[in-house]
Each structure stands twice: as structure tokens, then as C-alpha cells.
Length: 109
Image 1 (cartoon, rainbow, N blue to C red):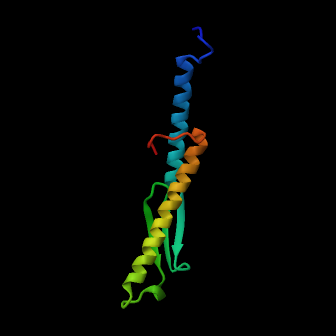
Image 2: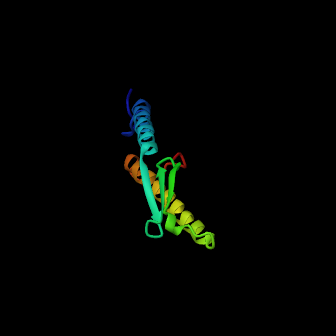
Image 3: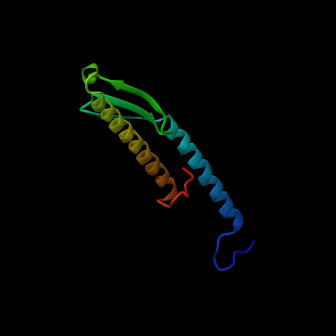
């Protein structure tokens, strides 16, 4: 098939798109198995999250547990969880950006 105006033919474009889709699926699967750790309060609260944004564990040091000050503990957990989610988002953007050359993924990931 002849190319008009130097444009790649549709078959080549489809092959490239399929290859990129496969690479993105593989990268997404790899991200899901990665674990990230975030802490708050100087390590008093630790959250482990996957690249899929699934919380795997939350560890709280006994010395931060004060029945008279539950709000501080709640704040520390909140800070650690939000940081873990931010790290997971950053990792996903970095890995997917590598494959797409920085092009937006249109909300696919």
C-alpha cells in the first residue's frame, strides 16, 4: 500500500498502538505489585500502599496512642495515608509518562 504525503499507513499505526497498549498493561501490572511506605510524626505512624493505591498496612507506635488526645493520632494517620497516595500517584505518572513520552493518557490510568 502506498503512503500519501509521507503519512504512515494504518497497519503500521495499529501495530504501534497495540505494542504501546501491551507495554502500558505490563507497566500497570508491575506498578500494582510495588509497595511504597510513608510516615508521619517522625515515624510514629507508617503506611504501606501499593502502586494500585491499596493500603497494605498501617503501623502505629504505642507511645503516640494517648486516649486523651485521639485527634493527634487521627491527624498523623491522615497525613501518612495522604502521603502514601501521593507517592503512588507520582510513581504511576512517572512510569506511564516514560511509555507515553509525557503525553496525557486521557484518564486511562
